[in-house]
Length: 141
Image (cartoon, rainbow, N blue to C red; front, side, top):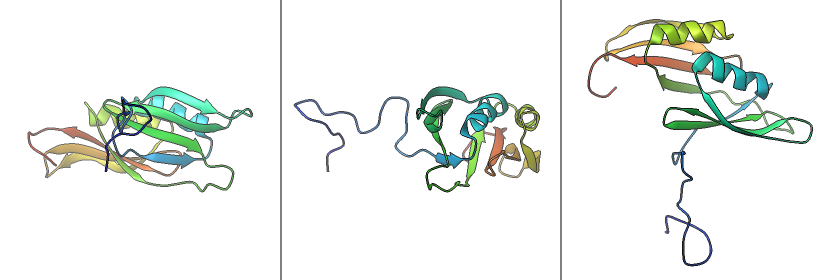
């Protein structure tokens, strides 16, 4: 199977620049407010927003370092999706404080974990859980 697509002699790369082959796609209520939470509370960078004429967010791309997620309004028969996400941060305590100030809820307090990370769980306004994790030791999780 070919790794690219397109017509003509030059195939497009399988994955667009700035994306990974698999990335989370969240359907949420009040997507515009949720995007504000991601930006203010989790230091996400909103790359673009595609909206319907009535302003409904059809999809938005939010970047966290080298990872992009997509967010859409749960409308037109689409159900809200819930998931757990793992986000590496420079300072877990500061990230938790920022997330709480932006409207998140503490699911698990920040603390030291036996696998060499300082980590806490943050519930977002849409019901997802973000594990905010600060690496303290070399090696993998």
